[in-house]
Length: 133
Image 1 (cartoon, rainbow, N blue to C red):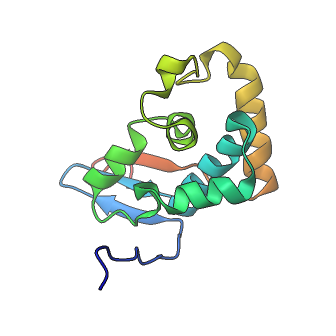
Image 2 (image 1 turned 120 degrees about the vertical axis):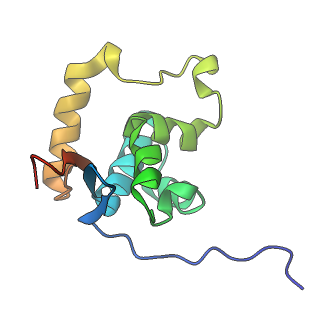
């Protein structure tokens, strides 16, 4: 008898669109998760396989079902999610940065290179339904 249920793996995809009455978001779930993994490798100094395993055992891998679920994912930097998965809760109390402000130029150059190399999209784009459709 199983005490837990295995998490069903859903295929990650980009171009997911969610809206409420006033706004919307295009969420690139695949690109978001891939970027988080690459951040874990580069800045968390773990292997890609371990990063994949950690991501696959997290809630980040679950397909969002609403704009509110996307808001939850995107209210933090991908860098934060990567460090949280790599080092655990309250990682910043151990001297691990929660953002890239101290090395912003290097980080942005690296991120652009990763997005180009692996053909990743921007993780998300919010829009106002009245003006941006």
